[in-house]
Structures are given as C-alpha cells and as structure tokens.
Length: 135
Image 1: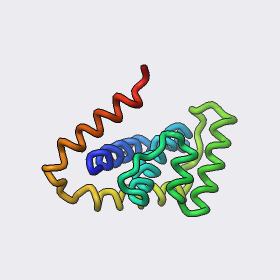
Image 2: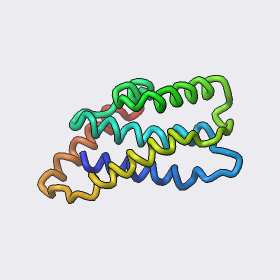
Image 3: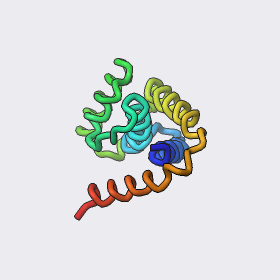
Image 4: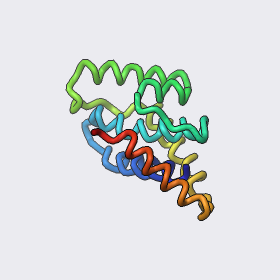
C-alpha cells in the first residue's frame, strides 16, 4: 500500500503547513493533521489491512501512547461541545505524535515501489473508491 501511505503522508503534511495560526489551531484542523498520522501509524502496525474510517476505532487500533490517547479523547470531547471552528493551542504531544508518524512514513515511502505491484495497487484503490463512495 505504498500509494495509500504516500497519499496520507502528503495530506498530513499539507494540513500541517496550513496550521500556523497565531491564536492557536482550529480544532477541526487539528483532526485534519491527526487523522493522516493515525492512519499511517495503523498501516505501519497492521500492514495489509485497510484502516477503519471511524476515528475512535482508528485511534484504538493504532494504540497510541497513553498521553496521546488521553489528549485525543479530550480533543474529541471538546469538539463535541464546541463549534468545529473553535481554536485551541497545538498540544505538544499531538505535534510530536504527528511529526513522528510522518517521519516514519517518509522513511517507508521513499522506498521504491515494485513496478509490478502498481496494477494491483491501482485495482485495489479503484475497488475501495467504488465500495466506499457515497451512492
């Protein structure tokens, strides 16, 4: 799944670049940074299995360090209570978690993909799009 890994790495890095807000970061954007990092971690820990879309399940299956899991739980609670545009400071543990997962993925993603696997990867990607796309 190197193509999927690269997609999530690119997505996460792009969101990270947009996060530099002086009065904190929008909680919604925090999750835009966090989801790709969590997917990358889940893919690294459970290779070959598609990551779940349900965010709490994704986090649980990625088994983040306890302080990160606690911060994520607090962010989810705050997001449920406030408007998604509410701002919060970037939690250092979340920043470190995301950066670590992106760095690990960059190390993995820079390995050259076997060209013989490309048709199978493209077929799988198309199948997933068709299966999970809204009707």
